Length: 129
Image (cartoon, rainbow, N blue to C red; front, side, top):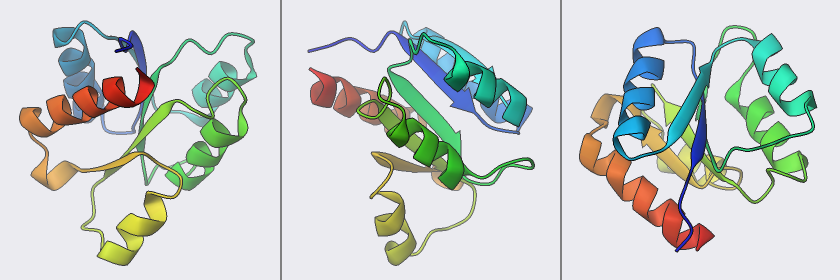
């Protein structure tokens, strides 16, 4: 089983960024957290893509999660990495199925729990292993 070593958190909510960063650290995953379009472009325009896992907020002020998911899937170094959509709105089953065509998991912020986070990490490691 491959270990997830590094995660990128893309969310405009500082509390969410801090919480996910601390949870990643609790599970021995280094996490970088960004919220601006400039930061996202800087990461993807660099030569090194060290991230094993991406947490992507669906609704952001300068960009949207769909564009970021497209960027993750269209970049050769990240196209097979795990992407988790962070959704603040309740998704219908149809919306969730549409999201899961681009992302590996959808995590509802309103029903978030450490147990769900841990479950996603375990599934990510199984898939990458």
